[in-house]
Length: 295
Image 1 (cartoon, rainbow, N blue to C red):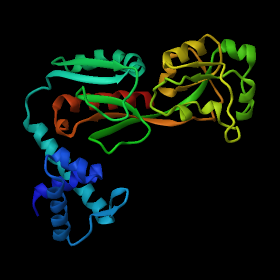
Image 2: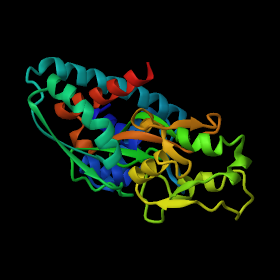
Image 3: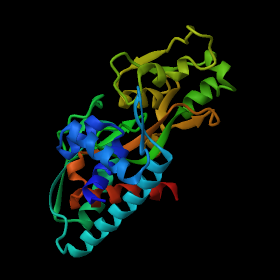
Image 4: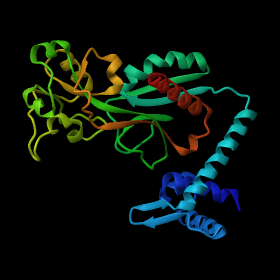
């Protein structure tokens, strides 16, 4: 059995998309398809199920994917042991303005202390494109689900929760349940807001507990999350904010049993950078920092 075929299988099992896998491996779609067929014939079993939605792993395919991943990890560990050079060079990182400025930037000092030969270039933007067009080495994205494009490493998940200022609570009280939201002032995300969720899901406070096609009217709409925070801290109303912001805002969580949409935080990069030592140490650093918050 040729190792190259197992490598091809490994990428197809990760992307579940022959076209995307062929682009990653820089071979034609037909050649890749033949290699997978050869492998299935060698193993005398089906590794993938093919349907209108694309590919899915068969039970034998899932077993093989696990084995190949373990072998790939062992090879990677050996390569790391034989490499004496320290990670060095510029690492271009892209994130949204809010997460980059509030969460990543304060932690960069520790990263630089550990890896002084790596220069971080942090690019912050207002929103995330629906399709990844890489202008950086690594993208930190807030995604509803894991894409099959390139390589995404989920490092955490957060939820949207409901927050209010102490002054607002003093003046208007706390909603007792979802139906009581009708009696409160809700700050909503405006039409031009471009967060990780679509606007309808993001403005779940306007719809929850209401009949279909019936929504609450917001007291204020703002397209920027910093504006939402400022308006909420100014006691204009209550709002839904991502839970990762809790340590940065002067607000109280209300209705804690009521959780909004959940969103993943993922590190994304092109497949051909998967062995880049700069990316490896940055990914490990980010995962370690996220883990600290959970312990």
